Length: 403
Ligand SMILES: *Cc1c(COP(=O)(O)O)cnc(C)c1O
Image 1 (tube, rainbow, N blue to C red):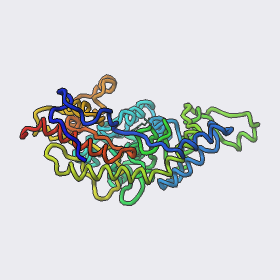
Image 2 (image 1 turned 180 degrees about the vertical axis):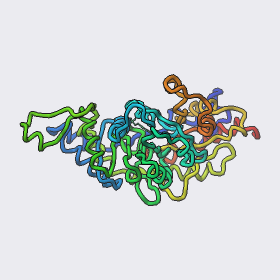
Image 3 (image 1 turned 90 degrees about the vertical axis):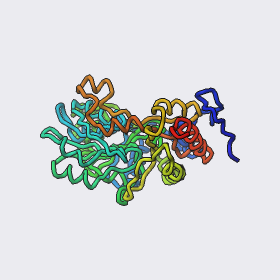
Image 4 (image 1 turned 90 degrees about the horizontal axis):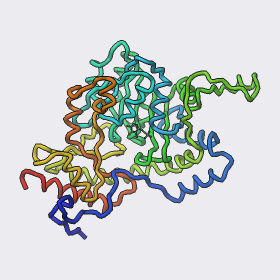
């Protein structure tokens, strides 16, 4: 049954499409997940126990990487990756203009300098054709962000990284389960980073994972998550089991056993989670690819998208208002829209530290004015999806020039 739609916008005192706000992302936890956590809580190991390696093993297999190292968040994973590849003060690391701040913050944690590269207007992925111009003798790495869940153009990025002797890092926090030319994200870069925050594909509350084929990098990652303590068992057995050495500066970035148990249980549901996200995305695509006021991002044909986010571009030239008003009006209708993201270099901290200014990445800046993220998650029902579509129609048509 179709809902009776009040023509008056909720923001102007009309009846909202929904009375409780539909969040832009939400976790999905079931009885298996709860039982898996409870089992570990009743065991001898709450942390540094057997579930860590079990989760790492299952994860590395899922993404086709030799090694996986579990850490306490996606941000910790990025920080550990920067340490593991040897980023030092003054080193430059190329990052896309549009991403979550942690992608660039991790470079700064190590004293490095993030160098911002503009994005493609249709995908909001780092534009590989603009990367080369930003490479200097101090450049050490490129961080590619699989924005919204679409893998970057890895063939081109890998070729550039190889030619200049740079590390290629994938910030794959949006892209667990995605594929590029049939290859899973997690096996496409030298080092790949994932997050298990509740809005991501699978959750451990907070949590993260790093994957790599390089045993030396994996060793440094394990060192970094545990205070820089060397876990060389041979050395320990020679000098007595109490003996350990701090060989470098590390942190406590460990993930607990009960979180890893949750992660294992969630990972088994990943195919189903992806299937549900695709159902939502396909319904949105159907409606919005022919919509007068919104336009979905372009999905390349050589990828399997994992739809962490569903982002549309507003046709502001056909409307009598701006994104901020559309945002407020949709929120008032009970739709938990969001914006991903302000170009990182426009955050006050970055402006202060690196003297970055508007004009640096014109595509990112102009797209930022137009983008809005619609709710998508494995927990959404088709009624939720219909509410979003109704609300987008109601609000954009109201502000449309030709209404
Ligand atoms: C979520 C996210 C992170 C950080 O992950 P946390 O687990 O929240 O620390 C980093 N980069 C991107 C692109 C993300 O979406």
